[in-house]
Image (cartoon, rainbow, N blue to C red; front, side):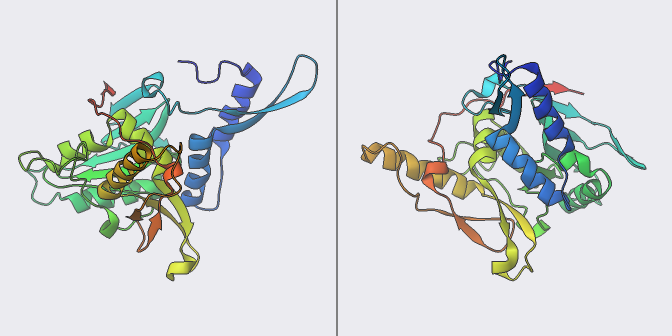
Length: 278
């Protein structure tokens, strides 16, 4: 895999340093800075052969061709930070960066619920925050229920994902965990969610005291935007419509409109295809 074949080694090293050393006053603020680099690339400078200085964007993820990325799911991934050593159940990596943390509870244990899994993720964020710097999504399940949400969201904003391909709700015989795994973590859909359906906003307008909040679209907004864009493109000769008629309920008590110039076109679905390591 070569994401930046035209960039010299010094530029790639510069990009790596910026990814590893990104700092901010809070975890959510650091996550926003990392998200920008994931989506837009890392701004780097390097010296050309003639001695002049060149600037470029080093890509971190290939959004156009998902299979050009390295996909890995790790079971019982051990993280040591400060005085704490923790082992989340499953961590999903893209190009070596942890983009999703999954916490699972045993359905046979009546004291283990989806919300005890949620609380475990809160503990991880407090004790091993470095794992969440690049995080795109958090997933919790007790084997019966499954909820997906974003960094910093309260449990009321962790919601089910009720469809796989978006054409209809998933069959009742499928578990919520299977639906969210297949519905979100198919490679193309996951990269689209990361690239187009996550935003960071100041909560001052919503009475949140100016706190930075991360917002991720739910399944219905995700697929509604895709359908709207596809239909608009089909009906128009213009290459990109101006705005999709959709708003997204998110991890805060607000909605936001999704510009269709930022939304992907609908695509056929395949199996997720993550490599596993346990």
